[in-house]
Image (cartoon, rainbow, N blue to C red):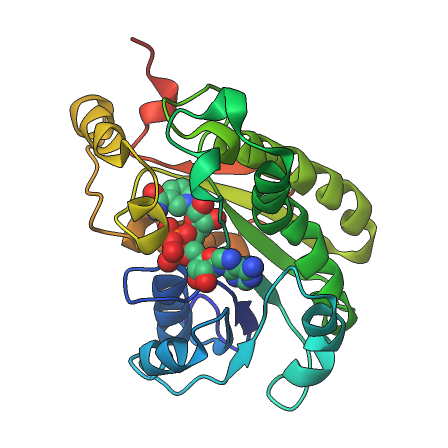
Length: 254
Ligand SMILES: NC(=O)c1ccc[n+]([C@@H]2O[C@H](COP(=O)([O-])OP(=O)(O)OC[C@H]3O[C@@H](n4cnc5c(N)ncnc54)[C@H](O)[C@@H]3O)[C@@H](O)[C@H]2O)c1
């Protein structure tokens, strides 16, 4: 029996083999789940990447800023899955002006894009998936520690602070439906999203020198495993929580 035996999971955010979402999908299949993948924009690429999963997985298009995509999502999933037990939100984006030291001059339109794609989308995705979660389930999002300001992370940091709050409100509103909402707060991982963050190398050095358990920014598996744990039946009373998968760095001052 796998950890997710018999479960049906929706995985957003697969872009390349380095995507955190790819590893969640891979491990979820290995642990017995049926997986439906969504991709944004470059669907041909996402389909090629999904073909590298242990088992075939349907790929559906989802731009979280497109209300037609969101409104039709449940109906498009139904031919592949009659319900969802788990949903992974692994989505983030901020325009270049919102990162890398231009914090004081970033125009509102770019801040709005970062917040819509990276923060509001957790609620949008939850509501799009809700018709398939009538028996409850687990929604998991990906966080980067927003309790402090990180050099250059700028408006993405503000968006992540909003994501942390959004997940708590969702936990409150969806708890009575048996839906848990939690975040995994990850250390730095070399992905396409990470490449867009100026000064990402400094995060890697910080983690390398200070994380008590050590940290390998080319290994997404510890983060993916933590997502799976939250989607399993083994944390049934946990919601509105931020679980750190960061080698323990968040606990250490200095
Ligand atoms: N890589 C890290 O160091 C790190 C650390 C902590 C948290 N995270 C978070 O993990 C999540 C996944 O990022 P990743 O590092 O795997 O990088 P990634 O680039 O592989 O994934 C980001 C995903 O967001 C998707 N996306 C962007 N705009 C979208 C839209 N409008 N609609 C739907 N999808 C959209 C992209 O297609 C991509 O699949 C993000 O929320 C990111 O902030 C990453």
